[in-house]
Every structure is written in C-alpha cells, then in structure tokens.
Image (cartoon, rainbow, N blue to C red; front, side, top):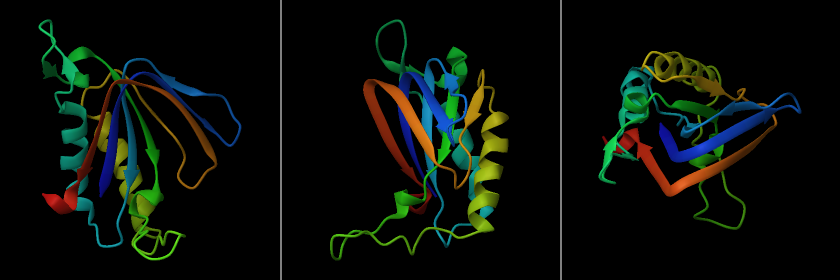
Length: 149
C-alpha cells in the first residue's frame, strides 16, 4: 500500500458534486492499494499515519503527531498512486488492486484510522468523482510505502 501524507492547515473533499467534507489542521492521506497487498498491513499503516511526528512543538521541532494535537484526517482513495509511467506517455494502472481487495483495504483503513484517536476523520468515496482542496502546511509531504517495510 502507498499513502501520501500531507500536513495541512485545512482541507476538503467534494464527492460527486455534494457538500464539502472538511477538516481543519491535520492530515490529508491519499491511499493506494497494490494488487499484491494483503489486509494485515492496514492497521500498521493507519497507526503510522496518525502518529507520525510531523507537527512542530513549542521549539519548532517536528516532535508532535496529529493525534497528540487533537487534529483530524481526510482520507481519499487514489489508485493512480500505482501508475507506471516507465513506458510511453500514458501511465498503466495494472498494478493497482481491483475489487474486492481495493475496497476492502480502503474500508479497513478508514476503520483503523478512526481508532487512532484523531479528532475527526473525513473521507472521500471509493471510485467516485472527487475534488480536493487543501492548504499544505510547511509544505510537508511524505510517501509511506509498505513494500519498503
């Protein structure tokens, strides 16, 4: 699995033209599932995302997590994180997981991230048309790839 984490001062997602789902300070997490992933890695990834110390303490050092600060998360599924652009000019998405693995992993991630102690967890909808607005704070953007663990 891949998670792109962005530290944000605020963010929102609009799903299929509906009402915005918003958060204040916290994390935007774009989540991609690979065809070879298994669900056993999901709890560890959710815990890692929520507890990464990427927020400044009183001394300006990155010593605090979103959970410690009472911040929120916005989670959006994103199969394009497994886009392969090595050949040609159009990426291939053959390594992205198909259903049911993709939806099972996304749903389990939402459940697990919700158990981490964040103030709020908002999310997009798997396979929907979504528009995301965010203010990247820092900017701080990290990529977590469970294949590297």
